[in-house]
Picture 1 (cartoon, helix red, strand yellow):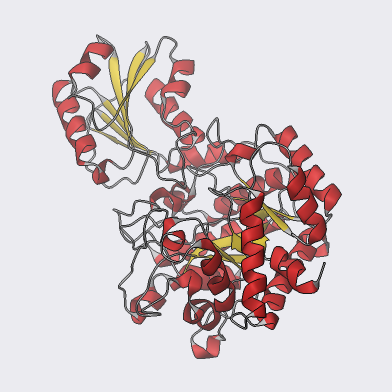
Picture 2 (tube, rainbow, N blue to C red; picture 1 turned 180 degrees about the vertical axis):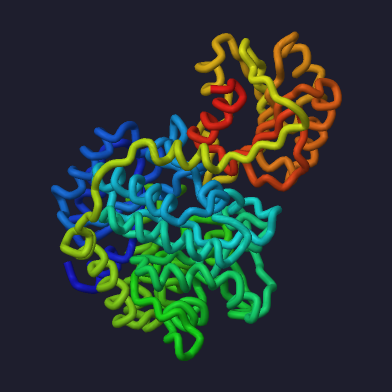
Amino acid sequence: MDTLTRDALTVLQPGFTGTTAPDWLLRRLGEGLASVGLFGRNIASPEQLAALTAQLRAERADVLVAIDEEGGDVTRLEVRTGSSFPGNLALGAVDDIRLTRAVAHELGRRLAACGVNLNWAPSADVNSDPDNPVIGVRSFGADPALVARHTAAYIEGMQAAGVAACAKHFPGHGDTAVDSHHDMPRIDADLTTLYARELVPFRAAVAAGTKAVMSAHILLPALDAALPATLSPAALHGLLRGPATEGGLGFDGLIVTDGMEMRAISGTYGIERGSVMAIAAGADAICVGGGLADEDTVLRLRDALVLAVRSGELPEERLADAAARVRALARWTSGAGAEQEGTGSAPGVGLTAARRAVRVTATGPYEPITGPAYVAAFTPVANIAVGDETPWGVAAELARLLPGTETGTYGRDAAGIEEVLRAAGGRRIVAVVRDAHRHPWMAEALSALVAARPETIVVEMGLNQGPARGALHIATHGAARVCGLAAAEIIAGV
């Protein structure tokens, strides 16, 4: 196969369906494909995941196996159970960089043990808009300096475990009220604000030696009035790659795009044209596969890149440079650069962090529940990054501590709280919410419930922006399984 076609395959990071590698994927690895992206659908257990990555490495020893494992609300390793690690907001709430580094190291150790060597994490976004529908608890917080120090600590911990980190979503997805999975967000901040807020954690990520940075499908007119960051030479080649002496970040590692099938790109440019524009703008790897996970997608993108070079639209040396950066990262992950440091396991560090992140507000003396409770979970529609297949809440953990505890789920269409009161009977009610400040129906239901039953315990598992309500208000700063367990322990007094 000619060099051009091999390079076009090398810059793709595709996904696939199933828990074993399909024949077409193994065949393309032999032809030059250098990376594979894994999602929750590909993972059944650590043992199965290790067998899958071994199957990939038998075809190509230095393959980059990437995953979107943030811990917290966005988990692929524990997609069916909920994560053993709290997410970024919980770590930011504790604000202990040694803890953040330890959590990232243990998460990285588990990924490495399963054969995963590139993690599309951490989120380095400053969550400056509390109504942000897609970042929220995935951010360390709203303060740029706090986000910067924890982003650096996370990267150090992850990469010390031999797994390449990927700071995202450059140049910052925190100040958006639109989810780029569905549409094109726009940030109207001026350059002064951008440098003082969004870019601070990315500078810290580069200084910490992050191996990769993921671009965001967001429009920042102050940088580029026409093109989203993923497709913008000003954002990628100019700002991210540019030397510090010229106001750039001086990043020399791998630039990977966010998922190209997200509507912000696919609905505006199409994935073929979008991929060509992204590589031309300075991206080195095309992430695709969350939604489009078949051989046809890989061939379409490969052929679009080859055609763009042959027609003169994409310089051949730019594609060759992108492919070289992919291979350089592959060498790091399989060579001396990724030798693990301090490889001792710390299996309990996630729960320790979750317990430390909990904030409790009581209106008076609190007596723990000793008998069965009733958990009313007020559930918003999950965003695509989080997914709706991962369980969350306190019901399962509380039922273990207080046998006989039952639960009900109530969405936007639930008719008032009469159903909750009827189902609870004489049992103490635990109301679980997620971002109550963003969902008026949820805040109203909560107010009505606390008015009817003042002894209700409220657990906020999203961004803790609303007023503290109930006899006991517990903010977990995330909805990971360990966050639910930490809250359940407080409710039951164990």
